[in-house]
Length: 149
Image (cartoon, rainbow, N blue to C red; front, side):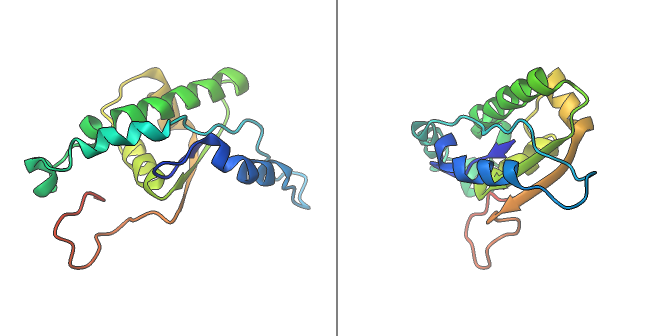
């Protein structure tokens, strides 16, 4: 599963997916990537985040991810459900998060989505790796407001 960066859509990751699926190691036991999905997030959905910016919760860094990013978490679960439908429930799941997508994936795996679906529970068992690219995992120094935690 690829969790995209802000304003990115599945087509933005086609070259990455092709590259990952073509990659083969010398070791015959090396894991291969069969089904790869990008969480489908229309560029326009990001306006939903803006509605939370002038809030007291945002300014006090107490904004709840489940409230602000529920649409992103739902897109992740939809893509994961597609992967399980194609590959079966015994598939190992690897998640690649790009920029804010890494933070959202980390929040999802850590339970901050508030999800209790069978897809979420299965992903808790089957996720073997989380790789993040350009993701803010720590507070920027001197930041007045930080929502990366």
